[in-house]
Image (cartoon, rainbow, N blue to C red; front, side, top):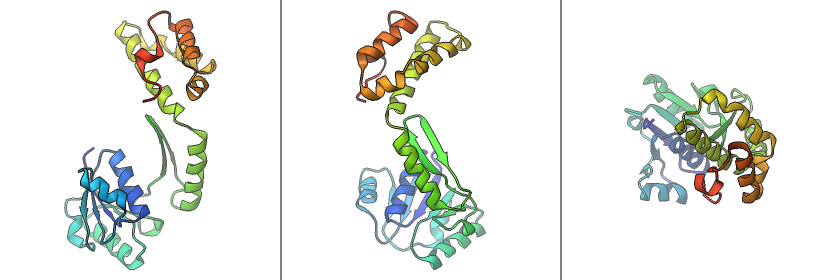
Length: 211
C-alpha cells in the first residue's frame, strides 16, 4: 500500500509492529531514543526510516497510521491526543481505551493470513490464541498455497474454466496433499498430481519444496 506509517517505540513490541506494517507494504518510520538491533538492521538495509531520538508531535505530519509502542503511559496518551487532533489512525499497544482502531494478532503462512481479535478486551488472550494457531498451522500451508496457485495458473493457461477446478482441488486436500508437503514426500505428491491432472504436473517444475 506504501502508506506512510509511524511507530513510536523501539523495543520488542515496536519491532513487531514495524515488521507487521512492512509485511503490509507500508512505508515505515520508527522514532525512539533506543532501538533493537533488528530495527537498526532494517534501517541499514533501507527497509525503514529510523530516527533515534524522542518523539515529537511533528513526527505525525503526513502519517496515515501511528502505532504507540512505548512503556511510558504519559507519552502514549500524548501520541493518542496528537493523532486525534490530526484525524490520524492511532493504535496504542495494550491500551485499547486510547486507540481509534484495534490491531488483531496475525499469523502469516505465505499467502495464508489468520487474524485473531478480542476487540481490545484481552490482548493477552489474542496473543495466546495466535501462539496456538502458529503451532497448528505450519509452513506447509505456505507451500500448499503456492502449489495451488501454480496449478490454477497452469490450468487457466490451458483454457480450463475456474468452476471446473473445484472438485480437483478438493481431491488434493482430501487425499492428504498438505501432509505430504509437510513431510516432504515429493514422490507421493507427484503421484497425486499425475492421478488428478495427468502428465505435465510435477512438483519440482511448479514450486521448490525448499523455497
